[in-house]
Length: 344
Length: 118
Image 1 (spheres, chains in turn orange, red):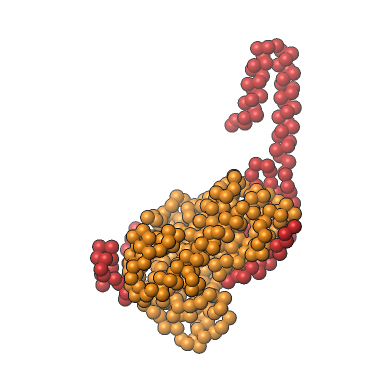
Image 2 (cartoon, chains in turn purple, red):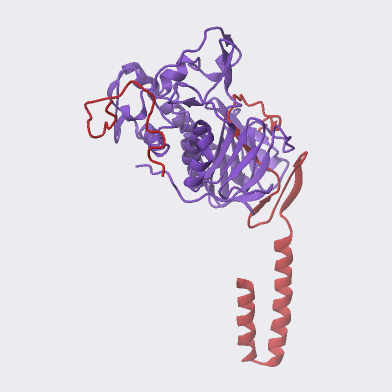
């Protein structure tokens, strides 16, 4: 324990997780409105890894958070439309968001910002989750991703369009952080999870990184129930992401709302799935596919199978449907296919 | 309403949900080899020398095999969590992270130990 703890930087943000020795080091910190966890082997790399991850998280937050008045995306919204020049980092995040929109046929759409604000998710979630608004939610039309135009660092958007990158930004962040972390060390492997959406880089441990798949990324207990089924998988490459309507819900006008918005209606997605997990080559792709799965409803399994993506879908009653090469057995290996989503 | 904004950059679309839903569906161990090479070279010298080399190599490989199998670090780290490792690649038996919906968390994980700079 001493060796791993001593390897951590002087940072109160990070907390060690099961550090009594062993061949992996694990640490966790709050960031981006959720929790970020890193696992690394050999554990002596933990100091460099959390340093690299810190930098990526800070950059992404400053680029893409719509809850920070000093972020780039808030600056764009303040302009109120037109053509703006953005940083390379934000340009990449937006390019991924548009690629996800194109790939999912618009199921995942970055222009849902105004619609989700109209439902009450207009500030950091921690500030709204405890209150119960009395106003009955009224859906706001979603402009659609085709209303955005991007040419490199130049972004053009119509007046009034608010960009929400929630369906892809965490995935981009996990991809960036894992890549940066493995570049900061010499050998070994790393797994970076941002709110349950994770990417690995380098070599996984023997058999893959063991990951618990559940409704909520805060769950640690691997003993599931019929209504709350969980599964352990071993991720051997790429990334894994889960979208769930069980998390980030709030009350408005006596109605429970959640954060996964259907761009076709401007309202929270309704359908048979409460949780969708997808393995993909990158976390951005997995994140987009998992969100699209929740929104696609009854067509989700065929949509995912058609793209060759291993997926696990959980119905509201707890029934589980496994798609493609998702392992049936607990502890089975999960190996994503090559990249399916084209990002220019 | 026109949606092909890439072709008509002067036009934008502000009304209506995305209606293009589904539109696009559609060996050899190095130690062993070294040992074999060593034996073949020894035979060109003498049978006694070869015998000595065989015994020596076998003893050495046995030693290294034992050393490689011994875990560098082994131990239960939390209730229900066990990790062990070899000098080559980590072996992890219990989940290190959970993939699930991203609820609001402010660092209150039940397994998170307070950081101590020791």
